[in-house]
Image (cartoon, rainbow, N blue to C red; front, side):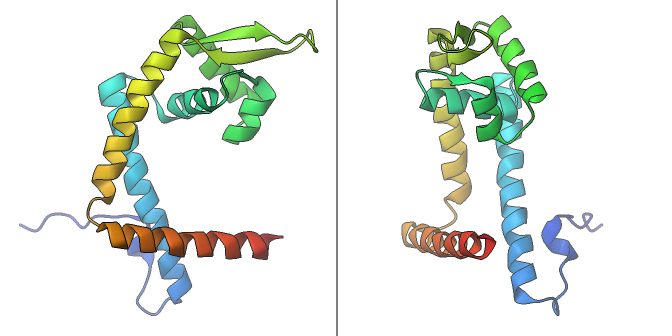
Length: 161
């Protein structure tokens, strides 16, 4: 018995589709496969979600904390989504709200010591997953892919402007 065909974004491409479309679908498929592994790992090993990890990653990069609207902009999600995640993380003692001296209506969100420690462990394991997923390429191939993607990104930004 043959296993069912795996369905991903790339399988919708036809051989006669434009090469650019096939490249786009392959990039999207690779991104989705990596993200699927990361989401599953975060859920299984840390009982957390990718949005929570991403929010903590932003806070880790900004030790002074971030306002809610800054978090929303950096994560490209609505303020309501941010509020729900911050509320959960605050209940768990991983983040804290700090008064914003220049604006009495606003506050900053910052990782607590426990949040720093928790995020550091998640980030270490997250990196291991990504390294493992990309280990099918040699160091030279990874360097070349990085260069090619940089050129693609630069051109896409140029075209968008």
